[in-house]
Length: 180
Ligand SMILES: Cc1cc2nc3c(=O)[nH]c(=O)nc-3n(C[C@H](O)[C@H](O)[C@H](O)COP(=O)(O)OP(=O)(O)OC[C@H]3O[C@@H](n4cnc5c(N)ncnc54)[C@H](O)[C@@H]3O)c2cc1C
Image 1: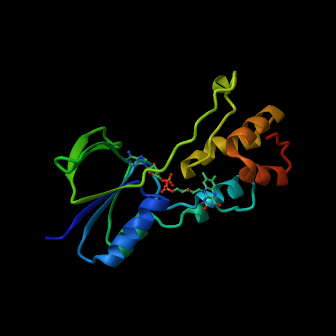
Image 2: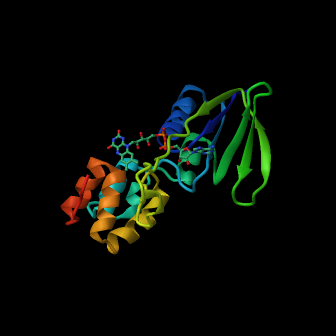
Image 3: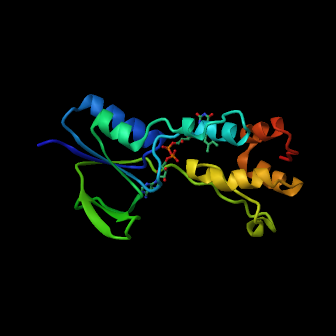
């Protein structure tokens, strides 16, 4: 009986784990659940795209769902959020974000590679700012590009706080006024 492995998260850790598992076990049934629309994108390149160094947005996609599914014989389910885990029955509940339906999936082994999420610091006034964005996802590029194109010095300052020094340096190089 082939081993059934579920992986939660399909970007850096999840996609790498899936590829490695396939290399180790040709018969395993490997299912990857990704809440977002994209897998395996180059997080490290996001600031370079915002900063105009990388011009082609698609070049940030390391592997498409189609390519990776085919190459490693994976069952990759995007827009699928794991909403609960029951280790006693070895099941997860998955919400299909395309239609809102929940379903159960069993596993022999479970890999959690769900990453992290940015916090917005509790600085007075910051939580109400409409020009504060976080950049951790390929799909997060659109609001960032909007603020970049309509930038004010206040917007630049908010970006600097949340992005940290390395992405902010990209903004500096394309002429933004950055405060950290
Ligand atoms: C702007 C930026 C620049 C960076 N630059 C560098 C760099 O130069 N060098 C470097 O080494 N690192 C860099 N990093 C860090 C690196 O990208 C991360 O360490 C890496 O992406 C973490 O991988 P991960 O798979 O753990 O998490 P993620 O890449 O965050 O992937 C986790 C995925 O899990 C999904 N997920 C979460 N919960 C669920 C759920 N319940 N169900 C289904 N899916 C779920 C999320 O949607 C997400 O796509 C950078 C990060 C950012 C944001």
